[in-house]
Amino acid sequence: MADNSGLLGPFYRSINSNLVTKIQSDDSGFFQCELQPGTYSFFVWEDSLYYANLIDENGYILPAVIKPDSVTKRQIDIDYKACY
Image (cartoon, rainbow, N blue to C red):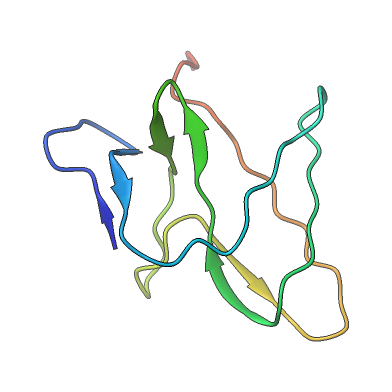
């Protein structure tokens, strides 16, 4: 679970689950890592808070499903400052 009490929008103060890995993106935003098969939630460290702008029907926050012997592409859009 993640705690976003008292915050507006897709920001969280803490993540109350086991950390699997930390990833640093390059200057173009590309990142990669190896994960065991399963469903994972992704968070972006942004301005001293965790950012994730999607929750699926199963309660996973910014989810990615990792399947055996395959590559999973996951784009994370950081769009809270965007104007549409």
